[in-house]
Amino acid sequence: MSLKYDFDMFALGGEGGKDSATTQGVLNDVGVAHTNAGNKIALFRNRETAEALAGASEKVRQYFLDSGFGLTTFASGAPDGFYPETDEDARLYVINALTVNLGSHDLSGEDFGAFDMNDFLEHIDTAEPMTWEPPQGVAALAAWGLTRLTAPLRRLMPIAALGLVVFAVYQI
Image (cartoon, rainbow, N blue to C red):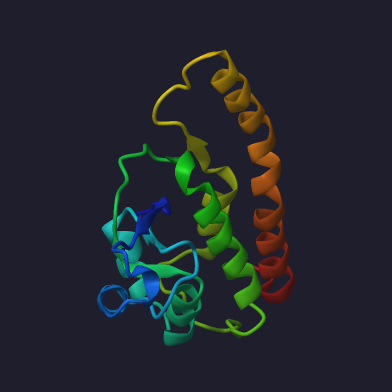
């Protein structure tokens, strides 16, 4: 069975933000040491995918945890292959963290278990943002159209960098 690699950004709340003791307790409970993605952590929607990551080697798990992922699930309600447009900045932060953290996490020869890094990278490359409500008015519609044209280019750079680094380092 192929795993589904859709993930959503889960906002950790409260006025204390990510530095509050309560929020840090929640982060610890879901398996995240810290996050800098605007008080958000990345959580897979699919339970089997989260379990596959949890079943990978300690180094693989730590790489994902340090990059802003958790080991539990959350579903925003977006359909497969899509994510809420409002998560764009936090997703790009996590994708960039995955790229940067490859420099400090040697994953060569590590056991990924059922978690398929190639399938995960393909999902990152093909997932698209979706707007929950259509914009109202001519100015909002024009701004929305401009965003729809530039967003793919904005996503392409960190996604391409992650793919190139993974391929160059691990030749997977």
